[in-house]
Length: 428
Ligand code: SF4
Ligand code: SF4
Image (cartoon, rainbow, N blue to C red; front, side):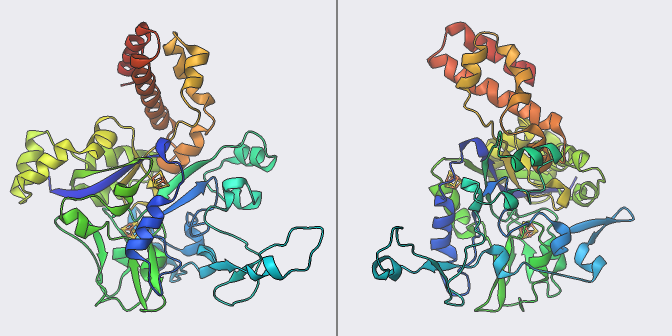
């Protein structure tokens, strides 16, 4: 066992309200400068939708990430000898509005309109796309680009019936098997030994942008002013001082949990090459991530020079509880084989009072109704568990049981709390 420690994050999507405070505070601190205007190291995208940059999940479009070649991990940009970073239009073309038009237009029957003006060309433009264009279902065509929708959901969306939406905040995942790092011919990208944060050495970077193409999450950005690539640094100056990242600190919904995870570095490549993505997720959680209370793990960690305060931090880590112990947090698009170290608690969609009202005392009956949640389990499974609906269903059951238990303690009939507790035990 080759134990390493990493600082990680888990986000509870049930609590994200899509306010973008995280994105804006991150921008004010890190990317509020020339060449970085279009960059959102932290972005929050509306789903279903094509995301930011548009269609980032389409690995064939950008030739990014890992592929399995004869059972071995190979970079797609090497296999295809072709690399394609997203264009500025894929992120979105920044614009302002022609406010003058509000005052100078001749009076007509219609209200004057401040048309968008491109900040790049200074020309009027039809705003074709933005990272949250799908909030108001502005473009169904864009929604249909979401690869997590299966055939039936696609049809439903196309007819504007029974729609659902959720928010997905994204940062660099500071992966265990980062393809950005592997793709860099200058070895400018490195993963810090002490805490696993993935950084780009600005002195070594020559702006080749292989990393931009190779990151399957499209979380490396090219700065047109400096001619170098940059990315989320997990606010390492704050983390080194024992403080959270800016996005975590300012998150209005308090959805972000930070903590240390211990993992077995010797298992990383083997697990990343697991052919079946659903199996890969289970192996990632069971084999790569380690139990920080296991005496053998503690001994191996000490042998590797991991200080005791990191081991204690791993034992107290909310991310350990969410991902490894309770199994309610999962990696985003695990089939990309980078073993991302940012995890997501899937959202429950309707407020749980709906369940309480409908099913009340027969709390055990709630569980079959998980399949009737507004956000389809299949959609969440496509996004977080390599298609494994059982993992998502089990997590949602636990979340429902906990929420009803907490609520029942305070407001509902006393007996309900006990039943919820029993149901939680049953859900594992
Ligand atoms: Fe690299 Fe992308 Fe992983 Fe971040 S998310 S470590 S940029 S591969
Ligand atoms: Fe979601 Fe928190 Fe960001 Fe608001 S600040 S969009 S609640 S992650």
